Amino acid sequence: MKLRWFGHSAFEIVSEEGTKILIDPFISNNPNCDIPVEDLEADLIFVTHGHLDHLGDAMEIANRSKALLVGTHEISVFFSKQGLESEGMNIGGSLKFDNIKVTMVDAKHTSDIDFTDEIIPGGSACGFIFQLEDGQKIYHAGDTGLFTDMKTVIGEIYKPDIALLPIGDRYTMGPEDAIIAAKWISPKEVIPMHYNTFPVIEQDPSIFKEILEEETPIKVIILKPGETYKK
Image 1 (cartoon, helix red, strand yellow):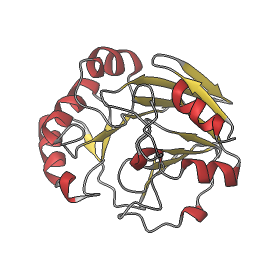
Image 2 (tube, rainbow, N blue to C red):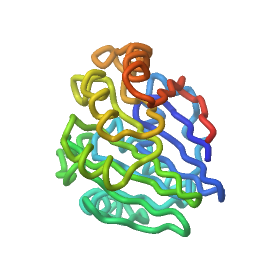
Image 3 (cartoon, rainbow, N blue to C red):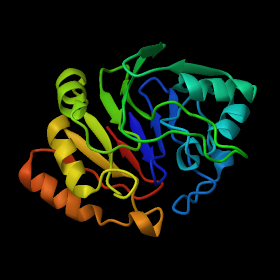
Image 4 (cartoon, rainbow, N blue to C red):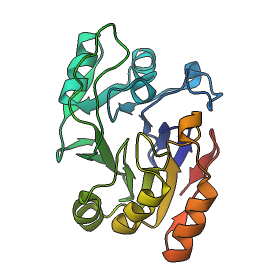
């Protein structure tokens, strides 16, 4: 499995069998991403909520590469109205794509589509748990604050191996709450996200790493935008 971070909350997962998954592909307007959006291809594109810095370039990439778009029912309806192929889900539901299982989980955030002439309701914000062909589980938390389901549902039931957690504060959890979330979820590894894209979410991820690794056996992987982690 290869996991590439584009900055903010945008990730690419390439599975063992070669399936290309994009999550929240905020690329062309992402100040920390120097990868041309035209270079990105995908089989599946997942969107955690309707805000521009998460829905991003999903529609352009899907239209060009014929990728399937996946989001909440409301986000899926929006995509369908743009003439794009999409699948809707909701919290607690799962879909299978060949040998990959994806479960939608809760997130505490807003989700209205905020870049159209009039704001369009986008349903609930969400996160995703990806169970890859080899059984490895990756949890993308989306934009979220701390909530107890991270312990009782995501940690105790789904048991992800890798957690992608926001640490930027202001619009999501900050580092202190993200440390609590990581302890509740108890993955083997955490990759921090949603920080340093804009001045209002500036954070030093090395402090998050130092505290979490000192207090738990969890390994923190700090990626630079464009960097790939292989597992």
